[in-house]
Length: 81
Image (tube, rainbow, N blue to C red; front, side, top):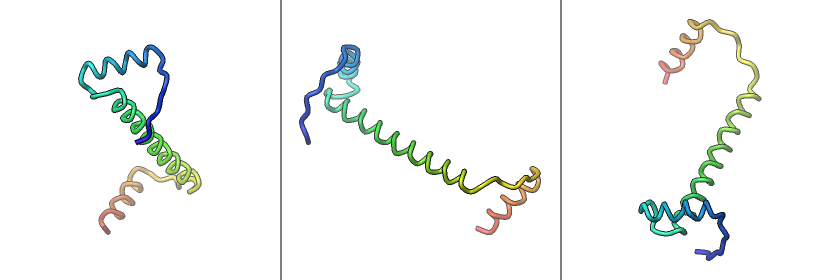
């Protein structure tokens, strides 16, 4: 593992100390690694959602359907699987 030296704002350092005191983490390093992992996972999720939104926008406008037509289409799709 790479060793780093970082400077924390006072309130962030206090928060980390409180997490360790509450036994949420064993060390500041463990807490920081966990938070970075969470941020990376969130970034990956955000990228995935953005890709899905862009794909949906590129697919064009959906045809106008009544509730009954839409339900029949879904039932048809799922009954064939």
